[in-house]
Image 1 (cartoon, rainbow, N blue to C red):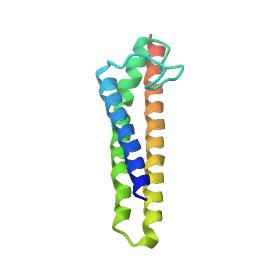
Image 2: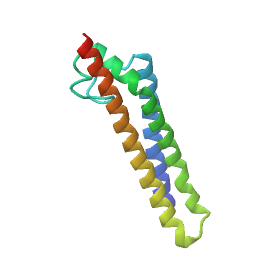
Image 3: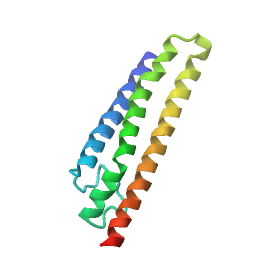
Length: 124
């Protein structure tokens, strides 16, 4: 069980670090267009201005994603202090709940960013 908790924590801390780094660069407007990190849709890739607008708009959601990922790295460790009969449930609920929330926040950031990108494209 400890090995699984460590693996989960390391993975979630990595997600948190990437989310916070991306959010910081996105808010500052310094995240370059790329094929690896960021909100990558047709609308956000339409121009540099659309990319920057999308990421500035989505930065708060990306920060929230980092907070939830960091919490998901820590919360499953509560299973260590609960009775044996509930340990697996605590781990599964916290990890799946955190992963689902991360997914939802990421989608929300992409929707908000896409709207901002389309607004820039339509105005230009």
